[in-house]
Length: 404
Image (cartoon, rainbow, N blue to C red):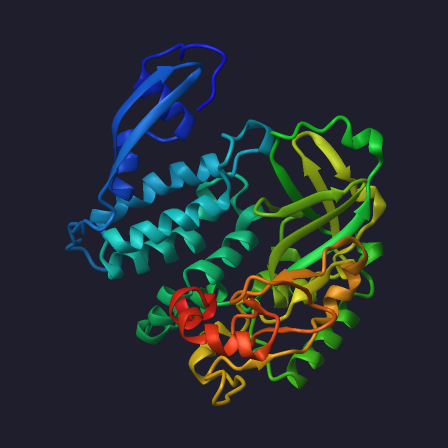
């Protein structure tokens, strides 16, 4: 932690203030404890002990009909306090915290706490307690569901097979969504960029359109539903995606990527559930860096202008084992994919088409030749021969789909 001088309060209190949570609560939830900390040369240095694999058994409730065991009530209260900090207005929030922080916390908690406790806890927190007890929670809910789908797929898939209660099963279905990466490009006023603080948080605000600007939404939804049926996609989605009256006036997205390498032309990427994108095409984007708005809502830049740049990203993961992929003797179940991503044409003129071969490290132009692993689509190869040579290592070590 960089400072302009020594901390103005005792070190423990200072670290708790920067974390946004008491150290004993942090340790209880994660198994991570503070070992030592000191101030030197305008910075605070801290060392931590990690014991996240230590299982905690919580006391079970003897009363029936409760949504969550009494032994895990404190668990719920602790996470609600952390969620409250993560959902604060961006200019008042501790740097680095976002709704995605909760997903990282859940990943650790799933190791530390019994599965039954975590099943009840996540259902209760996301669908019952969070929306009522955490200010602004509903505005961050779509991003929370997005990252739950992306990063907790292994647990949710197993839970889906075990959960027998229809109400909970339907609710948890909202956490098993096909997700895609979306990118949009726009030109920013140089005077606006000159006012931006590079240390400030970057976030998107997705704003519900006025009634007059959303008259054609029902037509678009019907068209999208027909398209999903043609593609064989699951059309059972949450009420949040289908009923305007149940939605807030806006949603926030904090985990985004913003590139200014071609300034003043900016490129922004973020993730959304595919069904949410298709049913919110007339919602308006606003992009902010701290208190500076670099894409104002007055520009009427709608979600329909955002392009899906990877149509396989975490798509249909729940049916992963039954998915159809290329099979051949040389590439095994991974296969060779030399099809060009047509969606990337929308950003060709401001992106670098060069790729590094995963095997020989040669730099080549993806538009001129080469291909990718057909399963994860994240490993690039200059030739089939290189892909064949690297296949066993890639499958075992860094194929993101295989490892998930």
